[in-house]
Length: 210
Image (cartoon, rainbow, N blue to C red; front, side, top):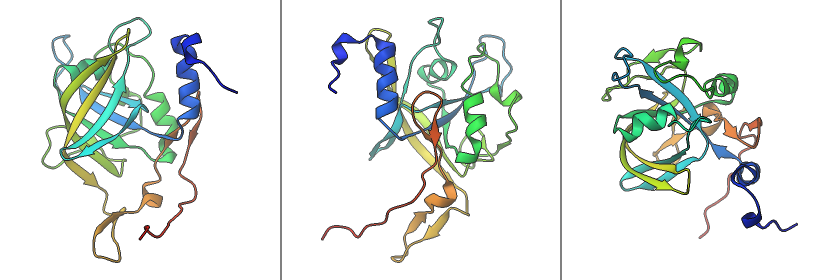
């Protein structure tokens, strides 16, 4: 079967892409809402995004693609980031799948997903925002560039990593004495299409080509 994407509308293309570009990592992003709307300082937004990946290591950069709400308003995370606010990108574990899904609900700007989720905040050393205490991996990031793409437009947001948190339980040492992250202990949650998610399953370890 060959599918001509030029003959499909945007929702149909999205439906196909999310079922074929699999599995996708999930950025579970914590950002601070602005106070211009009257929300108190320290009011945090939390939302998952699976159009996400590592982009570069020098400088260390993540990329996340964020659209708009169904009513056309900016999604809260996008509104916060395009204004230059910092954020914390978490890697959720598979056992947090329901909370990740619940945090994707559309709320009014200034309403916090944390109010209804059984999650705790912890101080993020050397960074001004807290991190989710339950996540084993977290990146403290700042926006380095925003690129708008397409008719919506979609925002491609480049996030430069300033600091990385690793839970001590997932940080191990390999045979060469280097820091290694135990992927099984991280147990990262992956995104598939529609309402489907996945865990990493078996890990295949190969010798490097010589």
